[in-house]
Length: 359
Ligand code: PEP
Ligand code: MN
Image 1 (cartoon, rainbow, N blue to C red):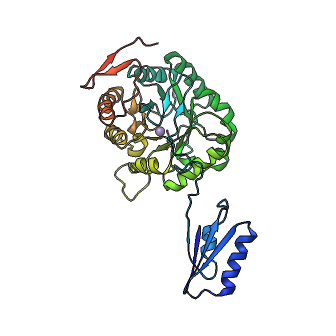
Image 2: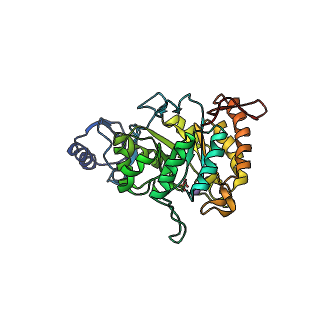
Image 3: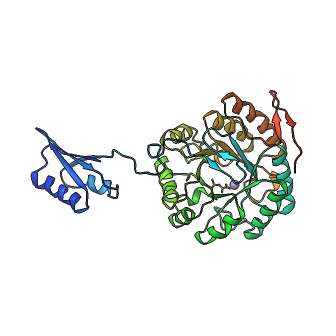
């Protein structure tokens, strides 16, 4: 960190600042020019408050030199993080791009089984399904809770699917991780620090969704909490941010993909369902995500979206989901990040060709 003093800053002001820093155990090196003084801070852990320091008498500007996200930054870890699931399936780095698909909420065994079958037949290995739902209104369907997780476990075993499901409460983390292969932290909880700390204590992969109003730096700092706790299996998920544009539910920030790739080593997925809020926009935004270099996408799929208990408008019908997969596979091939499609391959025209029996 470098502190640039104002022209005309007085000696007592410079001295006060230097003492303030040394009292915090930081070594401050002073460089005095003809007109201005600059104080360089060597070492230190970044535990000081830059805003407070900028307001101290005589200070013109405080410039941060090293990034505050020590563990999530690319500088700290130049290689891409690749997360390996128990059967060897990999996410991130040069691994095939993944698709996570499933209903917004787990509603019934029939709904889940039909969705699982469709998802698995498309070669997809990851199924999502919310059991604990963060709903804007307290009067909306709140999810089936642990009964929903039991259903996810049962159906995922039947179809050999990895399960992604959300945890909302710190106290639920130990129990929910037993039901899931990837634990989701939702957008609304991106800055729920007690929850992030609990997630840092487990060793399951985590899908950390970006807060709708979070900057990339805030998002990486949220990931930092999890890594600092000792869990380095974090997958970021861009799910749309709030902007001045109101045509769609949110604005999908595609540039977050190359920005994250540059700033961090963590894998990043994109969720075009929540970003757009409309099923007719999902496929094109999924393709854009893969073309931009995302490590995968997450979409909502429902057997009867018009009757879904949550997020029906943005949920793909089975037909639209299969269509999306056919389109996505070609984009993924074109950018050299072929989709992970298990048990099937896709012909150059996007047709699904079975290569092995399904469970
Ligand atoms: C979800 O994945 O269903 C969800 C609630 O997402 P988000 O946290 O991004 O709104
Ligand atoms: Mn949803």
